[in-house]
Length: 449
Image 1 (cartoon, rainbow, N blue to C red):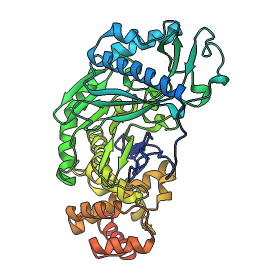
Image 2: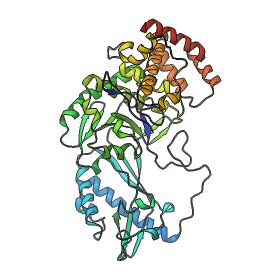
Image 3: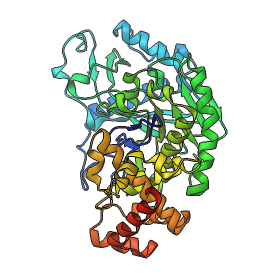
Image 4: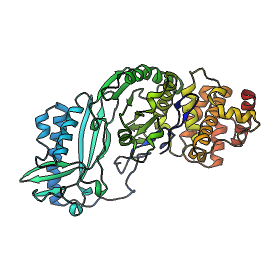
């Protein structure tokens, strides 16, 4: 996780820390045991799930059927059938929220909405207190439940989210009783935009914008900028990526936190690219979204928004070739390079702190270090400015395609030793780290004197 930085001169955040680059956050999802590559929080290798007893198997069959009917009702827009899956004795506030959820999903184009029940992950409900522990129910059960959903035209493979569902049996019929009762037991329900209000979906050629009613001016800006941003990223990165992006515009910090993670510093973020599962071996990623700040993004100028979107969409495009632990200067410098590439801004304008430092006689003593991106305020700004200038130097000196080749080669290697890094740099640029540093310093002297 990390924070976005807003360069004061541009009022644009161009860095958001995350899994494999400062603008990427991984929202862990259940992972198959045999999935290679990076896939969020998987199970330990060789782990064997506990055996499922006959009672749990019967419950699983009944609850699986219940959730299949719930999903079918959502997709067919059958509110009566949807309501029939809810416990009539449940908390009225829960029942009301569920009806709102059904209504809010009406305009969302879905290719899939389904559930998986994991009986082996059932919780011990003896610790539940009333009203969650309903004595009138014949039985209650809390297995693991995953939601699988796919936005039409965006998700070639459904994305997975964990749900904290509590079920109740009354007679021979099972119902969904709560999606919050298990929070005290450590299991929370993922919330999507539709949990926070009606969702309006506005299409563009290269993606969609999901927002709530009342945001038309901002949505119009995003729709106008989305296609040019995707095309700009493709001109640099190439067309070997889906070239379809979902932009999410939440209405509140609470909603943004639900989308990007409870520990994320949403107050200091204007945009962040997220993914829930990434497999760099198979070159696949699910659940990729760009989430805009409910406050910060609205304050951006058109030029600033353009830079932010291109930066974040670069992370989306490059994500399946970005191994965790790759050098931050390369990941963020490259995203900034694409973001500013067609902005018309020169090095001194885009890196004012770096320019002042160089003109005062202080050159970067080393290539930017990962720890530099854990700094604050000016220190963090300087880390990004140095990284952008380094990426710009590589493109100016060796050509843009060499910069792209360096990213694919070095970011695809992940965490490697200093000697291995030198080998990658020599293979692509003909320079090791020391030679790259000297050449970059010479470039800065020439460009910023």
